[in-house]
Amino acid sequence: MKRSLGIVALSLAPLGARADQVTIFAAADNTMYSESVSESNGAGAWIFAGRTNTGDLRRALIRFDLSAIPAGATINDVKLQMRLSKARTGTDTVKIHRANASWGEGTSDATANEGKGAPAAAGDATWGFRFFNTTSWSVLGGDFNAAASASEAIGTSIGVYTWDDPGLTSDVAAWMQSPPSNFGWVVIGDESINQTSRRFDSRNGTVPADAPHIIVNYTPPCDADLNHDGFVNGDDYDLFASFFENGESGADLNHDGFVNGDDYDFFASHFEEGC
Image (cartoon, rainbow, N blue to C red; front, side, top):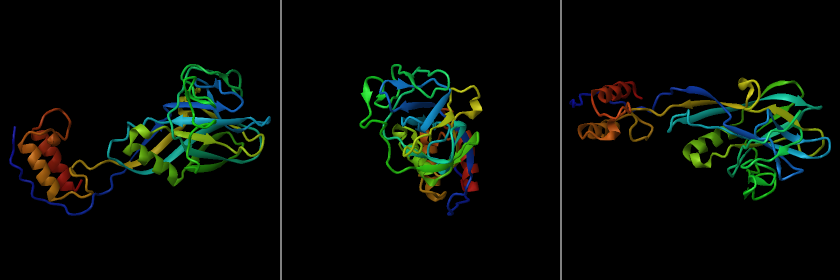
């Protein structure tokens, strides 16, 4: 079915804001234990960051599947939230660093309070391995950006803490531009003194809502901005007209596998609204 394109209202203004928000829970998490390259906690209920009373280090890994965010969306703000379930004393800074290499979450499951790791299973991340025991980190303790993407002072009060720094937004925006680079974050506590280790609920905990999660505020891509230049105008009209008249897939805006009047109506509605 074809229609003549009688759309006459041309918008020359930038796209209007149509922000949406989504909460995404961790797709994978794990803990690395500095005292052993063969211990991990892929299936454990908790993840750890900081330094123990005996001087051993703990670093957590978390990764999120961003497929719920539409391709081409503009990332406006990202908050990371994790629930603290145990801490010793004082207040310490916990930093979030962007991971620079892929890593695994295996079936290892530490016992009791999980402060000590379990024997690593195949594919687990450990202090020495990205994937136990076949692929090593380039440096012990993980490959990550030296500069933190976010930091937050974490006390001893049990509950949810929020990291809300621009670096998190930049990381997620970069991952949306290049999904293969999404290796998640490394969570690092104060490693300068003993007794700074913090325990957070993992995605494998007993309460799913307490798992690490990000809250992403984004602006969806505009369906009428076909050339993706940030404006809805005659250039988009001409591009849609060409696609539509030739029955090309670029005009299948409702993604039903057909180019027909439904796509015309879809484009006309969004074009006249300026988005």
